[in-house]
Length: 237
Image: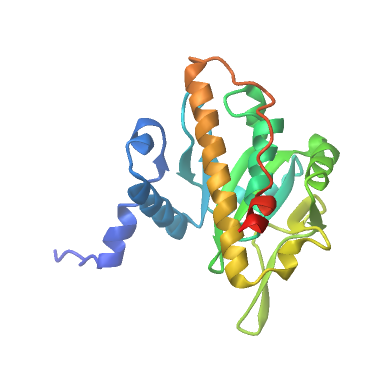
Protein backbone atom coordinates (compact mmCIF):
# COMPACT_ATOMS: atom_id res chain seq x y z
CA UNK A 1 0.00 0.00 0.00
CA UNK A 2 1.39 3.35 -1.03
CA UNK A 3 1.85 5.73 1.87
CA UNK A 4 0.44 9.21 1.64
CA UNK A 5 3.23 11.71 1.21
CA UNK A 6 3.31 14.22 4.04
CA UNK A 7 3.63 17.84 3.04
CA UNK A 8 6.30 19.93 4.83
CA UNK A 9 3.66 22.08 6.52
CA UNK A 10 1.94 18.94 7.87
CA UNK A 11 5.23 17.85 9.40
CA UNK A 12 5.67 21.25 11.02
CA UNK A 13 2.17 21.13 12.50
CA UNK A 14 2.66 17.67 13.94
CA UNK A 15 5.70 18.86 15.86
CA UNK A 16 3.84 21.69 17.61
CA UNK A 17 3.66 20.79 21.32
CA UNK A 18 0.27 20.57 22.99
CA UNK A 19 1.62 21.62 26.37
CA UNK A 20 4.83 23.36 27.42
CA UNK A 21 5.46 23.92 31.13
CA UNK A 22 7.97 23.66 33.94
CA UNK A 23 11.60 22.72 33.39
CA UNK A 24 11.10 22.16 29.68
CA UNK A 25 9.96 25.75 29.23
CA UNK A 26 12.51 27.21 31.67
CA UNK A 27 15.35 25.57 29.73
CA UNK A 28 14.58 27.51 26.54
CA UNK A 29 16.48 30.66 25.66
CA UNK A 30 14.44 33.74 24.79
CA UNK A 31 14.56 33.22 21.01
CA UNK A 32 13.51 29.55 21.15
CA UNK A 33 10.83 30.36 23.71
CA UNK A 34 9.34 32.97 21.38
CA UNK A 35 9.58 30.65 18.38
CA UNK A 36 7.67 27.83 20.05
CA UNK A 37 5.10 30.23 21.51
CA UNK A 38 4.47 31.69 18.05
CA UNK A 39 4.08 28.23 16.53
CA UNK A 40 1.61 27.18 19.21
CA UNK A 41 -0.44 30.35 18.74
CA UNK A 42 -0.47 29.95 14.95
CA UNK A 43 -1.47 26.30 15.23
CA UNK A 44 -4.08 26.31 18.01
CA UNK A 45 -5.14 29.99 17.70
CA UNK A 46 -6.08 29.79 21.40
CA UNK A 47 -3.52 28.88 24.05
CA UNK A 48 -4.10 28.87 27.79
CA UNK A 49 -1.50 30.42 30.07
CA UNK A 50 -0.94 28.05 32.99
CA UNK A 51 0.36 28.84 36.46
CA UNK A 52 2.44 26.01 37.91
CA UNK A 53 2.35 27.05 41.55
CA UNK A 54 4.83 28.63 44.00
CA UNK A 55 8.39 28.74 42.71
CA UNK A 56 7.39 27.69 39.20
CA UNK A 57 7.06 29.42 35.88
CA UNK A 58 4.01 29.81 33.72
CA UNK A 59 3.41 27.50 30.83
CA UNK A 60 1.28 27.13 27.73
CA UNK A 61 -1.35 24.66 26.62
CA UNK A 62 -3.12 24.53 23.28
CA UNK A 63 -6.81 25.04 24.00
CA UNK A 64 -8.62 25.90 20.76
CA UNK A 65 -11.73 28.00 20.16
CA UNK A 66 -14.36 25.45 21.31
CA UNK A 67 -12.81 25.23 24.80
CA UNK A 68 -12.60 29.00 25.20
CA UNK A 69 -16.08 29.59 23.84
CA UNK A 70 -17.61 26.99 26.15
CA UNK A 71 -16.05 28.62 29.20
CA UNK A 72 -16.75 32.19 28.09
CA UNK A 73 -20.42 31.50 27.35
CA UNK A 74 -21.07 29.54 30.55
CA UNK A 75 -22.08 32.61 32.56
CA UNK A 76 -19.70 31.61 35.36
CA UNK A 77 -17.01 34.07 34.24
CA UNK A 78 -16.66 37.78 33.59
CA UNK A 79 -14.83 37.94 30.26
CA UNK A 80 -12.26 40.67 29.56
CA UNK A 81 -10.73 40.94 26.08
CA UNK A 82 -7.70 43.10 25.31
CA UNK A 83 -5.85 43.69 22.06
CA UNK A 84 -2.19 43.01 22.81
CA UNK A 85 -1.00 46.05 20.85
CA UNK A 86 -3.12 48.46 22.88
CA UNK A 87 -0.78 50.45 25.16
CA UNK A 88 -1.65 49.80 28.79
CA UNK A 89 -3.60 46.59 28.21
CA UNK A 90 -0.82 44.14 29.06
CA UNK A 91 0.13 46.10 32.16
CA UNK A 92 -3.50 46.18 33.26
CA UNK A 93 -3.94 42.41 32.96
CA UNK A 94 -0.61 41.76 34.69
CA UNK A 95 -1.61 43.94 37.65
CA UNK A 96 -5.07 42.42 37.76
CA UNK A 97 -3.64 38.93 38.17
CA UNK A 98 -0.89 39.74 40.65
CA UNK A 99 -2.96 42.01 42.87
CA UNK A 100 -6.32 40.23 42.89
CA UNK A 101 -5.44 36.66 41.88
CA UNK A 102 -1.76 36.15 42.84
CA UNK A 103 0.03 33.26 41.11
CA UNK A 104 0.95 30.47 43.48
CA UNK A 105 -2.10 31.02 45.70
CA UNK A 106 -5.56 29.42 45.68
CA UNK A 107 -6.93 32.75 44.39
CA UNK A 108 -5.19 32.18 41.05
CA UNK A 109 -7.70 29.46 40.20
CA UNK A 110 -10.11 32.34 39.60
CA UNK A 111 -7.89 33.83 36.89
CA UNK A 112 -8.18 32.01 33.56
CA UNK A 113 -5.98 33.59 30.91
CA UNK A 114 -5.69 32.92 27.18
CA UNK A 115 -3.77 34.33 24.25
CA UNK A 116 -5.67 34.13 20.98
CA UNK A 117 -5.01 34.88 17.34
CA UNK A 118 -8.07 36.18 15.54
CA UNK A 119 -7.94 37.33 11.94
CA UNK A 120 -4.20 37.88 12.23
CA UNK A 121 -4.46 40.03 15.37
CA UNK A 122 -3.37 38.92 18.84
CA UNK A 123 -5.61 39.34 21.89
CA UNK A 124 -5.55 38.39 25.55
CA UNK A 125 -8.80 36.93 26.88
CA UNK A 126 -9.11 36.84 30.67
CA UNK A 127 -11.86 35.12 32.63
CA UNK A 128 -12.50 35.97 36.28
CA UNK A 129 -15.40 34.80 38.49
CA UNK A 130 -18.66 36.54 37.59
CA UNK A 131 -19.13 37.46 41.26
CA UNK A 132 -16.02 39.68 40.99
CA UNK A 133 -17.43 41.69 38.10
CA UNK A 134 -17.96 44.99 39.93
CA UNK A 135 -14.70 44.71 41.85
CA UNK A 136 -12.71 44.08 38.67
CA UNK A 137 -14.48 46.91 36.83
CA UNK A 138 -13.48 49.33 39.62
CA UNK A 139 -9.92 48.00 39.46
CA UNK A 140 -9.77 48.71 35.72
CA UNK A 141 -11.25 52.20 36.00
CA UNK A 142 -8.79 53.13 38.76
CA UNK A 143 -5.99 52.55 36.24
CA UNK A 144 -7.27 54.93 33.59
CA UNK A 145 -8.65 52.18 31.38
CA UNK A 146 -12.26 51.26 30.59
CA UNK A 147 -14.29 48.17 29.73
CA UNK A 148 -16.41 48.70 26.63
CA UNK A 149 -19.53 46.60 26.10
CA UNK A 150 -19.24 43.63 23.78
CA UNK A 151 -16.53 41.73 21.94
CA UNK A 152 -13.98 42.82 19.31
CA UNK A 153 -14.83 42.86 15.63
CA UNK A 154 -12.44 43.12 12.71
CA UNK A 155 -13.48 44.59 9.37
CA UNK A 156 -11.98 42.51 6.61
CA UNK A 157 -12.92 41.67 3.04
CA UNK A 158 -15.89 43.99 3.14
CA UNK A 159 -17.40 42.29 6.16
CA UNK A 160 -17.38 42.57 9.94
CA UNK A 161 -16.04 39.53 11.78
CA UNK A 162 -16.70 39.09 15.49
CA UNK A 163 -14.45 37.07 17.77
CA UNK A 164 -16.01 33.56 17.89
CA UNK A 165 -16.72 33.33 21.61
CA UNK A 166 -20.34 34.40 21.54
CA UNK A 167 -21.50 37.90 22.43
CA UNK A 168 -22.86 37.83 25.94
CA UNK A 169 -23.80 40.58 28.38
CA UNK A 170 -20.84 39.67 30.63
CA UNK A 171 -18.19 40.19 27.94
CA UNK A 172 -16.13 43.40 27.78
CA UNK A 173 -13.29 44.82 25.67
CA UNK A 174 -10.45 46.86 27.18
CA UNK A 175 -10.01 50.42 25.89
CA UNK A 176 -8.02 53.46 26.94
CA UNK A 177 -10.11 56.16 28.60
CA UNK A 178 -11.26 59.18 26.65
CA UNK A 179 -8.52 61.81 26.53
CA UNK A 180 -5.69 59.31 26.95
CA UNK A 181 -2.44 60.37 25.24
CA UNK A 182 -2.50 56.95 23.56
CA UNK A 183 -5.05 58.29 21.05
CA UNK A 184 -2.65 61.03 19.94
CA UNK A 185 0.39 58.77 19.51
CA UNK A 186 2.02 58.26 16.15
CA UNK A 187 2.78 54.66 15.15
CA UNK A 188 6.41 55.18 16.17
CA UNK A 189 5.42 56.63 19.55
CA UNK A 190 3.04 53.74 20.15
CA UNK A 191 5.79 51.20 19.42
CA UNK A 192 8.09 53.02 21.83
CA UNK A 193 5.42 53.08 24.55
CA UNK A 194 4.77 49.35 24.09
CA UNK A 195 8.50 48.59 24.37
CA UNK A 196 8.75 50.52 27.65
CA UNK A 197 5.61 48.82 28.95
CA UNK A 198 6.99 45.39 27.99
CA UNK A 199 10.33 46.05 29.71
CA UNK A 200 8.56 47.09 32.91
CA UNK A 201 6.35 43.99 32.85
CA UNK A 202 9.30 41.64 32.27
CA UNK A 203 11.25 43.21 35.15
CA UNK A 204 8.18 42.96 37.39
CA UNK A 205 7.55 39.30 36.52
CA UNK A 206 11.19 38.31 36.99
CA UNK A 207 11.16 39.95 40.41
CA UNK A 208 7.94 38.12 41.30
CA UNK A 209 9.41 34.82 40.12
CA UNK A 210 12.51 35.34 42.28
CA UNK A 211 10.26 36.12 45.24
CA UNK A 212 8.29 32.92 44.71
CA UNK A 213 11.44 30.83 44.41
CA UNK A 214 12.98 32.37 47.53
CA UNK A 215 9.78 31.61 49.43
CA UNK A 216 10.54 27.88 48.91
CA UNK A 217 7.01 26.88 48.14
CA UNK A 218 5.28 29.39 50.39
CA UNK A 219 2.60 31.56 48.75
CA UNK A 220 3.85 35.01 47.68
CA UNK A 221 2.62 38.24 49.21
CA UNK A 222 -0.91 39.01 48.09
CA UNK A 223 -0.07 42.65 47.37
CA UNK A 224 3.12 42.74 45.26
CA UNK A 225 3.02 46.49 44.67
CA UNK A 226 2.12 48.40 41.53
CA UNK A 227 3.89 48.49 38.21
CA UNK A 228 5.33 51.89 37.26
CA UNK A 229 3.37 54.16 34.93
CA UNK A 230 4.87 53.35 31.51
CA UNK A 231 3.36 56.54 30.04
CA UNK A 232 5.46 58.67 32.39
CA UNK A 233 8.63 56.92 31.22
CA UNK A 234 7.48 57.26 27.61
CA UNK A 235 7.09 61.04 28.00
CA UNK A 236 10.70 61.30 29.23
CA UNK A 237 12.02 60.02 25.90
